[in-house]
Length: 92
Image (cartoon, rainbow, N blue to C red; front, side, top):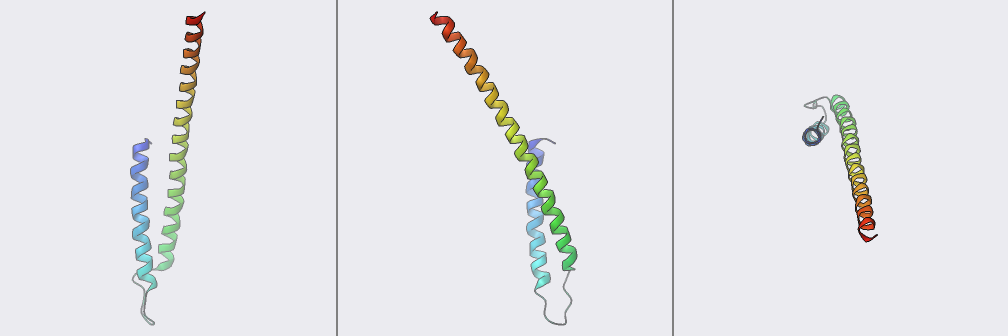
């Protein structure tokens, strides 16, 4: 999965979580003797599943960012090493 796809998926999951929280709120605000519009237990189960999915996705995104940053640092070290060798050779 590309990072752009992961970021779009993350935004979608966050939106679905917000909608689910609102549906849970509406199901919790029920008068005595009335039935909730949706089963709160099912909504909670779905919310937990989405939160778990979001957690794993964020971990994967962060891991990708870290690997990219480490790759950049390694490249910068190599460039600095080459530059330092060039400067030493030019000054010798």
